[in-house]
Amino acid sequence: MIKRELYMSKIRPFMNQNIVKVLTGIRRSGKSVMLELIQEELILQGFSDKKFLSINLESKNNKFDSSVDGVYGYIRNFASESGGKVYLFFDEIQELDGWETMINSCMIDFDTDIYITGSNAKLLSGELATYLAGRYIEFKIFPFSYKEILDIIPDKNKSEAFEMYLTRGGMPFLYQFPIDEKSAMQYLSDIYDSIILKDIASRNRIRDIELLKRLIQFFVANIGNSFSAANISRYLKSEMRGVSTETIYNYIDYCKTACFLHLVQREDVIGKKLLQFQEKIYIADHGIREAIYGNNMRDINQTLENIVYMELLRRGYHVSVGKNNKNEIDFVSVLGNEKIYVQVTYILASEETVEREFSVLESIPDNYPKYVVSMDEIDRGRNGIKNVNIRDFLLMDNY
Image (tube, rainbow, N blue to C red; front, side, top):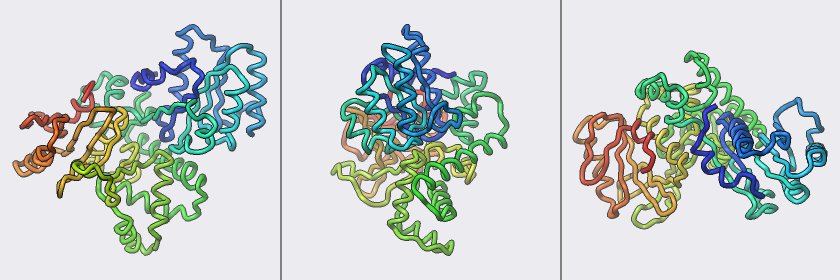
């Protein structure tokens, strides 16, 4: 297993502490493996795995009644037999109705160290946040980064690995052993179906699956493009389907909650105001886009932009789309007191393209780092603005 040190370095200070560790992220992004890595780390620190109890709430092979009372009784028996501190690992905990009260009871009733995963971005917006105010911390887990892929397939050079990454994305399973392109796309398509049916439609009681899929197809086709409910409504009318603005935004919210899509707001760079219209949407894994829509290579600008956006999220940045007068900055990214501005383009093929990408950054009156990220091998940087090849940008330790 790849060690995923980016996440372990954040989790490690809270291990063996009386605080619930919550790992959230899209289905199959590696959350279950993170639980295994945490257990390995605890063993290295000298803790016995006989004190570990792992429960996968999606499994049909559990040795207990899959209700809150059944799970709690199983934990109580384990804690009683083990004696002393126990380590509890819950995978896909949103599958257990009423899990929030059970976690709170475990914190109160046992000497325990708790880790939970879930494919739901709103895992902490309900009762758990109320019960455990100040006693939980969330870690967002994303599919493999380009750097992680290089670590797991070191026999490929950087260019070959990136070409594979452009179409397959970062779902960990695809890099565990050699797999042909057709099989990779089938696997990603199956993940997509699982997300649609289990994490979006079933959880939100959506009956019109065909409408949901049409909307998602629109979002996926238009990653990185500005959208409004009005232009989505026009698209659906052309498809002979009518839908309200409220329904459109509800469906977007459901996709966000499933950690599948990310909605990015616009911000006035000078006035610091959030602008309410013309947001952008990105997908959690661009490989899924290739599987269900195709055209990642044809839509290379959109694909590269999606990759950079997800890398910024992976590193903990809060990301918005910048607006400076009539100019748009692809990403305004803030992490604590740090800020960077990023423009993404395929190649700087003409002086017109160079001027468009650099001038918008030159118009920003501050001294935070500014990047134009592209596939170019030659540095076209100017006036303190760095032009970085996207492979190198994704491998930089710090921005």
